[in-house]
Length: 212
Length: 288
Image (cartoon, one colour):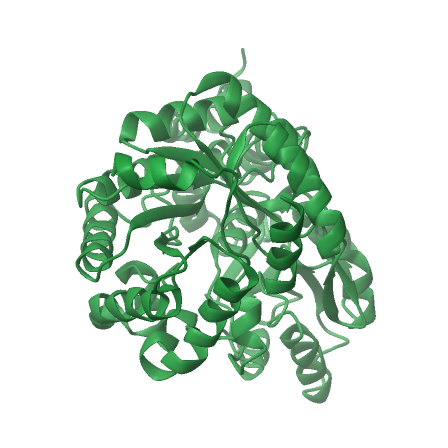
């Protein structure tokens, strides 16, 4: 097994200490930090996403794998500052919308996006439209990812999209939405750019929106 | 404790209640409000909900305390009011139930993930112990642990409830996996029955997550692995959005006919979760 394959396996198995050790080993062997993302972390988390979609993995396995991936990204991020080859896949402002305190789904999506190479600006739960607009501006984000668990709060997603438009930012950012009551048709009806039915779908969606 | 169940089960199936959140929204609860806090600020409206279920024929009603553990309440800066909210919740349901129904006090999840270390087992235990003690001190007849998806958290909740000496009903929510027969954390009905029984539950079951039709298979699987009475509170089918509003696929009539199948599959306690209303309970009372 190559070092990259070993790292992938350790991430999938959720072994954070092993991932940390292998990351340091890779660096000591002269492997470029920017290479470790596409060759180890991203394919491992894609496999985790596949297993989740196929119901082989459930939330605990996914979170433990994402945490193992973070053991690598924590080491690599500081080394990549200013490295043009290692630009993040995109900057995502993510949150649970105003009036809604449910953040488990949002946290899982944020961790999966982070290990797919996105820079995450996590605003937490119960976040107002103004705060989202401010964060998009301050961090020069190109994606907004919103979650809602309640049918009563999902309407606030629409207000966020309107606030982004009013601030002149709607052309600059793509908006993706998700959460238990959210559907594809709802996403379309409020003018979002996409809907992710689960965390792996959110990663696929973020990639296609960032590339568009 | 044994006597309570003997008395109730002598006339099984025992009708429980339906959803409270939507009934409270119909009475003015706003998105983002803490429903449990209404026990202090709007007790008369909460009592209307409890009374509506008693009048519809519920022999067991729950309490408006699903989210009243201090970890969940902290999101609304109400952690310090945990005991008062729980006490008031039981008192409200007891007023509505007097002479007609039993009060089974509701305890839901803490909203944070144990295995992600968002919260420690000790904090979760303390929060559940505080809540269970307040519910017991206020005179609840039993405690119902609801909507659990993580067996480790469910275990802590059941243990806290059992320590009060009250009978304990423990339910998990099966909404994941290809066959919708796993909890969000991957737990199967068989695993759930094992964990909940070992933790000290007197009744086990399932609530929320899906409609009655899907819970028939879950009920049969639970029946096959435990001798404990079974508790079932499914949703009113699948939610659909029409014009930005949520509608559930089942009517009181179709729900009641599926509930009969649940009883045939071994359920002793029957009620509803999201999307159900006093109308559903009235129909169940007429059919069962």
